[in-house]
Image (cartoon, rainbow, N blue to C red; front, side, top):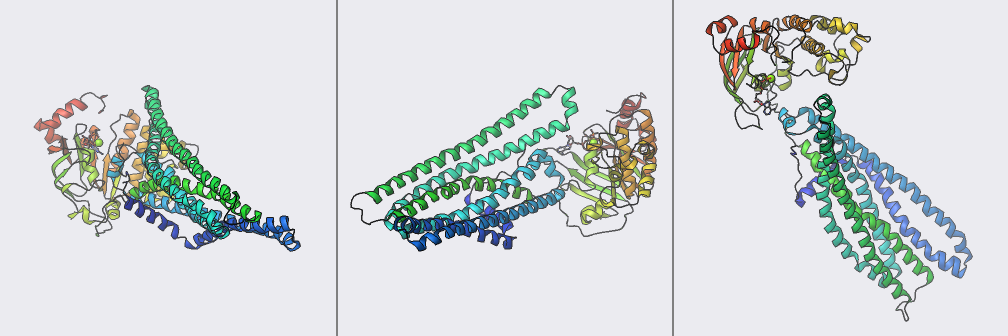
Length: 593
Ligand SMILES: Nc1ncnc2c1ncn2[C@@H]1O[C@H](COP(=O)(O)OP(=O)(O)OP(=O)(O)O)[C@@H](O)[C@H]1O
Ligand SMILES: [Mg+2]
């Protein structure tokens, strides 16, 4: 499993990641400011409460001052009212911002996903990418909301409580403040580990998603080939790894928090001793001491949260790195400006060579071909000879080829991507159907809004109307994921109808190699005749009749063109094609698998 976005460890990277993350939050600065107002009020209500303790004890209880006895209860309720209201304000506004950031990130990621080149999909597992959308984004939102809340609110809380403590008794407060650096040191040590473990958790989440996804997609193969144990083991391993890494994170938190509390308890002991020992330098009233103690006890919660905030923050940053990795992946090159309504369909391949990123050797070697508008070119050749690769270059699914490909005499890189692809209809080797209605599968993409009449006409030409009409819901039938509720031949005909509806001047038809029953075969054959009429057609053909009727047959082997000519010419020549033909088509029932 490739992971192209392992975040680096340098702190300047962390900062820029963090700044970028904060940038998303600041897009909503109005709501964000409201949240901050809320946080400040919540924070100040703590020392406010502590401050009430002093007059409450000294005035109401010890001196029994009638004025104080009246206003203290009111003030108490007041403090908690402020606290309740501002608590709601900060929590709601912060989460509003967080949800907004999640949505924005997911939208940006999906937009990017739609623009990524084929090569990205070759080298990144689906599970990994999905996990970025589900798990990583949530982690980032946590960092962007709860972490910010904790940092702002709790820092103010801690600072104002300590300030109040200093006001009450500088000497006692000084003792407390001495332990501060120890806490800071611990937090620093812990945070490094958090980040590492968080990254591993993310990767293991990606793996978990990946295995589940593959097992679902491949469930038939898994069943029939008895892969359950293998898949279960695979899953268990990644699941187990996820558990281990999560536990490591918990262990780090669970160890660090009590240690910090122990450090704090020493300070507590020292203070009580200093305040109560014989000949204390300052005489301290009960109210002052209680107010001091209350402040100190109230410090525990925010300090604890502040030490934990690292977990959230580091998780968030690791996740943000992974998300920004996706957002920063280069998109398809689309620098061409040329646009045209409809090309004639003249095609030239000049000395085209190509290798996949993942492979060392060239999959296409010096391909040169001249195709006239309206011609049908059949590509034949052994499996793996490069036929699909060659036709995939035309819609620029891969861009890094050598040589040039001209459409109507113009380099395909000079066309804008959309315009180029508008000229091309495509029926792939694997039929792709969406879990939607048949009508929407035929009228897909930019054809989404066409009239129903046109859809039906396309289906009729593709010999698909009959079986569609026989379905209880007709064109509104949902085909299921990848079209599982249709037969193989039906799926192909829906795909052909889709290509027919597009009515593009260039057609790429990568015939499925799977054999169909004779009836489907006949239907598809007839549909194909309809499809290739009046357009330049590149067909990777496994059907004899498609090949025999082609204007030109191109025989490929190991990435090279080894022969070209019409069926008769090549048979007479008795070369590679003739041999292939004898092998594949000599027996009527021999399929081309
Ligand atoms: N995405 C990819 N990344 C790396 N290598 C690839 C990729 N797709 C195909 N290949 C390799 O490129 C070569 C040509 O593959 P291609 O799919 O073009 O063959 P083909 O002629 O269409 O075969 P078939 O008739 O079986 O469909 C093969 O050796 C294959 O292993
Ligand atoms: Mg192929």
